[in-house]
Image 1 (cartoon, rainbow, N blue to C red):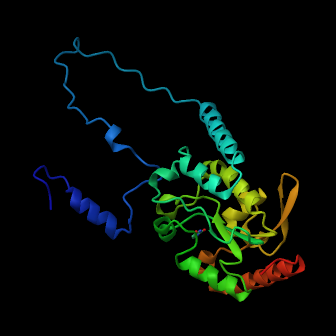
Image 2 (tube, rainbow, N blue to C red):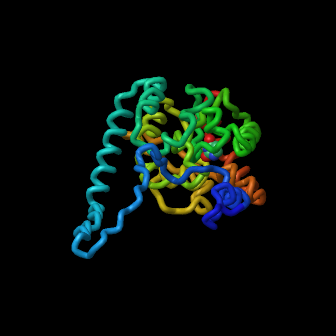
Image 3 (cartoon, helix red, strand yellow):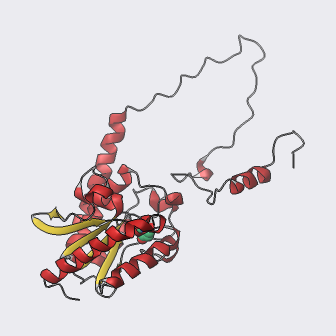
Length: 274
Ligand code: URA
């Protein structure tokens, strides 16, 4: 399917990408294609004398400028989150927050699910395709495994509350960038403050490293109780494996089961409501 000029047709290129496994026509960041000017055919100067002076190459912005604006953006996220006194206000604030690039490619905000009065709060990484479509966390295959894991310790969405580090799906389920996590963190911390859980279960490395501010991997962290200090209030946290990892590595379910039993005991010892 060659074009008259001999170049490969757009359809053929697209088919090649699909065969190679591409399932989304988007990149890491959204592109406003309406804002991109049509390329104009360049007119060659007839003589050397008529040739215009070369245009200087665009100056690379110094990194420090980028850093400052990232700090400013995070500060505005912080101010918006702090001003929220209810979960509904927090949801509305996130809906109004346009600084996170993920919002532009996501279909829905995935805020939370379950009982906001629950003693157990569960935190995952970020919505996937199913969650993005439905606007609810953990509704895809890993969510089904999470429901079974919770069921094994008599927890469900009636007595637990579930959210994620990021409320918007990263394109193609890629790992969240440090900028995205730091931008969304003030909203998550306020989310935890408003739910006031007695215990947190952190699913996977991203949730654990973001909230516990550590670079230690989840294999080492899992199963060890730690505290999240929220303005002086210490909330016990248990990092464990993410259900998506357990689907890929079922042999690790044995350790995840130990973690679930540890959570069950902690909730019981703290007199948590079931
Ligand atoms: N994985 C997550 O971390 N969160 C979801 O909501 C779904 C899958």
